[in-house]
Length: 368
Ligand SMILES: *[C@@H]1O[C@H](CO)[C@@H](O)[C@H](O)[C@H]1NC(C)=O
Ligand SMILES: *[C@@H]1O[C@H](CO)[C@@H](O)[C@H](O)[C@H]1NC(C)=O
Ligand SMILES: *[C@@H]1O[C@H](CO)[C@@H](O)[C@H](O)[C@H]1NC(C)=O
Ligand SMILES: *[C@@H]1O[C@H](CO)[C@@H](O)[C@H](O)[C@H]1NC(C)=O
Ligand SMILES: *[C@@H]1O[C@H](CO)[C@@H](O)[C@H](O)[C@H]1NC(C)=O
Ligand SMILES: *[C@@H]1O[C@H](CO)[C@@H](O)[C@H](O)[C@H]1NC(C)=O
Ligand SMILES: CC(=O)N[C@H]1CO[C@H](CO)[C@@H](O)[C@@H]1O
Image (tube, rainbow, N blue to C red; front, side, top):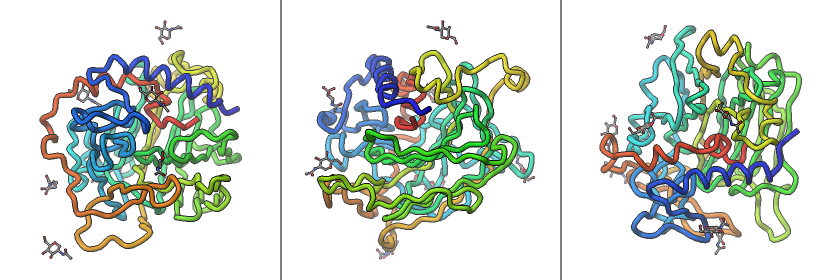
């Protein structure tokens, strides 16, 4: 059973109460944007400068539409993980250079098992609170396939999602208690629908023991989910237009995120714990033997499909005002995505505090 919006709200309330003590304190949202002294509204809804203006920075809740750094442009890619050299291991010091890095470790620990030429292991321990990596580049429509093996433990959730800075979200999620199932979902601008749009695909061939290709094919008018190239679900934008003519369909540039997160812990809402298959057993022999739970990622392929081709020398996406009801316009720009003040210099006290966040909020606020 999926947890309710109430469970989500409870976890967000927990997040706010924990993070209110953060150094930069000021909260932000679309009705109360950031002040000019700390113009950027982070993914967690707190105002700041520096890395607050990079991945996850919400333009609509920041001081102005151009407060956040421009978002690195999509590039077709076949990401593999022969080693960790393309992953920046501390989001605080990543300065926005998407040429230097393909991924940023937002939280947790990764290792490279390098068995069959390299696989990335996302680790969960009792103390690390889970692991999440985000792509440095954004995707403004396109097809993404992640080839991965999920966790298999109650309360441990493997996720492969896309998430925009205004919280358009597309999910593949795998609660570890059901290794023959995968769940799909999508959200528009963080709005929780009255009735969930989530569905569960059943009868998969053991997602822990076998690699499968999970695909999100996100196009301007359709969203298709596939497993091993077989379409399992199709959503039409035209079926998600409300009575005011507003399309509740993801439409803004999004980062790709892969995570392994602890839903079955006592700070989670009861609905979240149930959904994930119960509390995590930290005495599980898999855990005590290895010292961690894990999920493995073999590759992530990206085929961009921008609605219009990017002209020569374009490097980034920027937000403009709403072009149609509630949908911000997105433009290409030649502006740099690199914050020259960052990249090894910034001290991170505020960010460190922000990392004390509830798992559901960290790993995709609306994963539920
Ligand atoms: C936005 O933030 C302000 C100030 O923290 C708060 O009073 C208000 O309730 C928030 N609005 C929403 C929709 O969350
Ligand atoms: C970004 O990284 C690339 C590769 O490491 C480097 O050549 C380039 O100068 C960097 N760009 C900036 C603006 O720092
Ligand atoms: C990144 O660096 C900051 C400051 O040194 C530290 O507090 C934080 O834990 C680091 N993050 C990760 C994911 O290692
Ligand atoms: C929650 O779990 C932690 C350790 O996993 C424990 O220290 C703490 O006492 C528990 N809290 C409650 C309210 O059960
Ligand atoms: C692209 O950038 C190069 C190098 O800066 C410049 O010579 C060229 O004129 C630019 N092209 C366009 C179409 O702006
Ligand atoms: C623009 O869209 C945002 C949400 O994306 C909404 O809050 C705002 O009211 C819209 N503004 C206009 C002028 O339609
Ligand atoms: C870090 C590391 O050992 N990488 C190796 C992983 O495996 C590939 C293929 O066997 C090697 O080429 C890498 O050097």
